[in-house]
Image: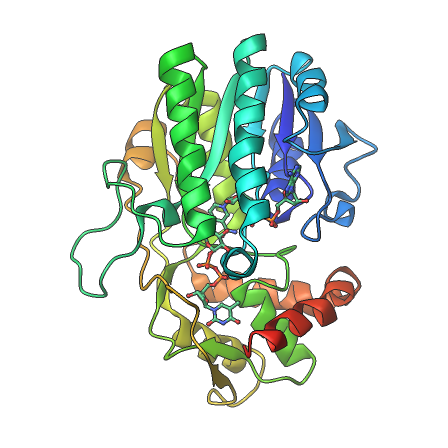
Length: 331
Ligand code: NAD
Ligand code: TDX
């Protein structure tokens, strides 16, 4: 099996490549543009093995066509992925998430290549804090931000190419990931690295917003299960029953790092901030027998904090520019 993994130098894509090398004998080619979010160091140790790196843009049809021609399956992670950036400058989100996905689908159609599309629970919009139900595969799309609307659009392109052109596609929509190698712009690594630098964590608004946390290793095992055993044309939701409000997460990070739990700042809220995400992953569990390994969030977070403590070389070069951007937003 020859896999083409787009966005394989990013947080979750690189985790998947490590997972594939550990658990299969597949050959992997990573196609990545190395934007501010891509880092080849996240693949260190792998490039000498069964992993080849191809620098390029998923919206570059000639480059994509070449690589897809020699792949048996595409696992598509590449995206502009940060909501705050999408509120500031939406265009790269349209280009990569929509035109990039379209470009890959056209190549998959031409070469008859299996396609797995990695998406997010944010396509469903948000829930009230007391809604008794969670997102399922049948929840209507209702995205809120430029990021989530372009991810929703990319999902719809995949569905259309599957139905109209017979592309052998599956889609997964996962909840919020955490773990090693996550860019410091994102909530959990931002707060951990702030504390490591002696800076107070920053909580948007009141902090009562809820996210459904899953460890990136569990996301990877789910994607591999869907790639290998998922039914063509189906969508699977991926989640690990990890709902937590943001304030509790900041307080837990502070406690685990030996700081007083009120040692953080409230900063202006995100525009259009989704209140709550929650995933019902029954279909994935029942059909494919998938189970998460990290069911204890505090344990996963402790290991993540330890990784950031030990890997300042990986994150420090991006920290100042990230904080300068947030300072400009007053956040
Ligand atoms: P990331 O921002 O860490 O990584 C994105 C990667 O894609 C980077 O390596 C970047 O260089 C690359 N890339 C960006 N534009 C590209 C282009 N035009 N051509 C080629 N490569 C390009 O993102 P992530 O958090 O790892 O997310 C990966 C995927 O998973 C995304 O599709 C995202 O929507 C989805 N997802 C993320 C989460 C989460 O919690 N982070 C949850 C559910 C789904
Ligand atoms: O400094 C912060 N303070 C804060 O309170 C930051 C960066 C975030 N937040 C809040 C906003 C959200 O409620 O924390 C929560 C998580 O924020 P992000 O890490 O930016 O994630 P989110 O917007 O929920 O989206 C993430 O999960 C779904 C990923 O970035 C997406 O790529 C994925 O699709």
